Every structure is written in C-alpha cells, then in structure tokens.
Amino acid sequence: MAVLVGITCNRVGFENRLSLAYVHAILQAGGVPFLLPICRSEHVLRRQVARLDALLLSGGGDPDASLYGEEAHPGQGIVQPDRDEMELFLVHHAFNCGLPVLGICRGAQVMAVAAGGKLLQDLRGVERVQHNQRAPRSHPIHSVLVRKNTLLYRITGRRKLRVNSMHHQAVRLPGQLTVAAVAADGVIEAVELPGHPFALGVQWHPEWLVRTTVHALPLFKAFCAAAGKCRKKN
Image (cartoon, rainbow, N blue to C red):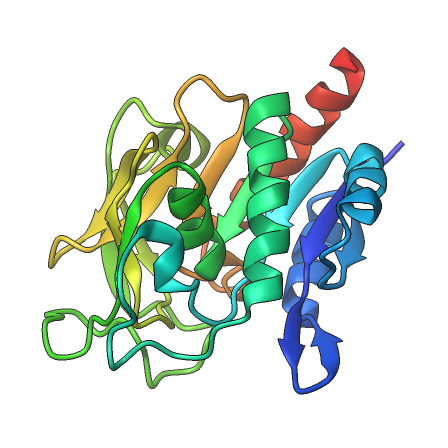
C-alpha cells in the first residue's frame, strides 16, 4: 500500500494553493499526496497528522522573524502567522515522533526555526550567487556542495549538485539541525536533524527538477521509502 504524504498548502488571497509539481513528484516516487490546508485547530491537526506516513513542507512566504527572536528586516516579504503556527506544530510533532519530514525552500527554514535556529532575512545585496533565478524553474542555476556523512549525501551519492534557486531568505543558524550542503557563497542550502530517521530540508525546489536532473527523484523516493519504514514500525 502506498504511503500517505501530507503536503502543506500556501495561501494566495482567500485560497489555499499548491503547485502540482509537488503532487507529481510524490506520485512518481510511489506516494499518495494528501493536501493540508492552513488550519490553526490543534484538534484537527492532530487528527490529520495521525493519518500521515510523512510530512512535506512546501515553499511559500517568509516565516515571521519574531519566531526566532528578531525584528522584521525591511526586505522581509509576506508573512502568514496562521501558516507559521500550523507548520511549527507539525514539524515539532514530526521531530518528536520520528515522522519523516522533507522541507522545501520555506519548509527548510521552518524546520530550522522549529529547531531553535535563525534566518538570514534578506540575501539581496550580500549574495554572490544568484539565489532568485531568472531562468525557468526547471533549470539548475548554481551548484551546492554536499557534506559527506549526511543523509543528503547518502541519497544522492554526490558531493556537488546543480540546483535551482528561488529564495531571498536562508538559514543563518541551524539550531539543533546540522548543515548538509552550502552554496559557493556560503549560504546554507540543506539541513538535517541528527538521529532522526528522515528530517531533511533543502533550500532549492527539487519538485521542479525531477525531469531535468538525476538527483531530484531519488530524493523523493528516499523520502517515501522512509515513510514506508515508519509505517511498518507503527
């Protein structure tokens, strides 16, 4: 039986939305996508997460700077307090219960905040690599160096990956997470939670790279495989 992967949605106006790229990536990896609209009810969230075999935190706006004890930078973008609250609840649950979690772009940043980390609020003006690309989303725009002895390295088997990039914030301090990959300019590109079966956050968008790189689909397959192992244990 295919694993059930909860994917958090983004709010645009009064609507919850999610790019089909996430859905297609999970389907290609053998999972069943289960969309999670933004919700503040802890009762509802507990019932939803009890059904899941894994959690995927999708991309979106900026986490509120107050969540990691800072004032908002002038360059901070759209903040959604209810989404922040929901995703932090889900991430803490995943960390504590061993539920496989994959954070993408904003999702990696939320994982870091949940682990006591801090964010670099605006890369513009300090970046030396194009982190908000003007090329198509499916086109890798820069390289990241993967550190050995990490989950990301075990999945990809590569020290260097070509990735896409669509962000203006990044993890500055990972808290209890460890750094798994960095860009050429030192920007943190991937984080992991040591001792967890599968807790990985990537700053790029692998869902758009499934057809254009050799490393994106194995990432989703490893995620779904971890979900299957988690289900068997429970």
